[in-house]
Length: 133
Image 1 (spheres, rainbow, N blue to C red):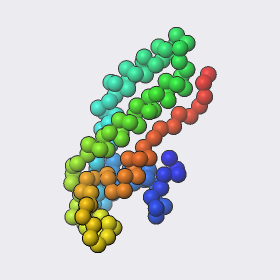
Image 2: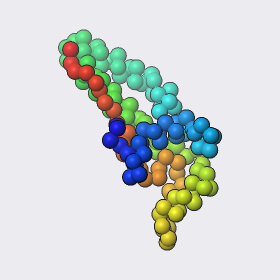
Image 3: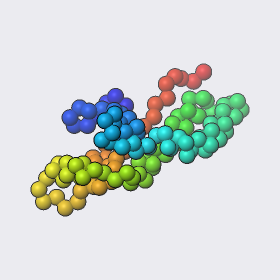
Image 4: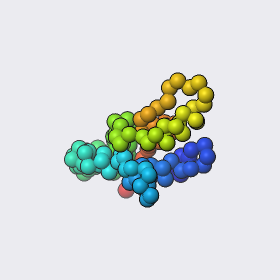
């Protein structure tokens, strides 16, 4: 979402793209959360969509309801994937930056990739554009 930004104004979506593909200079390795989730969940999402559109044809659901459900499912699957990513490990420089940010005397500093502030995980969402037929 356009409104999802870190305190310094950086868009969460931009950071997610860099994490997904890695940085152009190679200093940040790819940590796929979206493409890998899509690959892992493709069959499940396809089956859900087929069942949903069968319901549309029967008149028990609208296409917007089906797409809303699929969006909720996909967003939940991506959030789960983010919690499961531990590799590649964070660079020493990133760990030091997190320690500085946490401040003197901080005893717990997250060493998990994609989990500095928790904002990326918290803002994964979906949007269905368009209404019912």
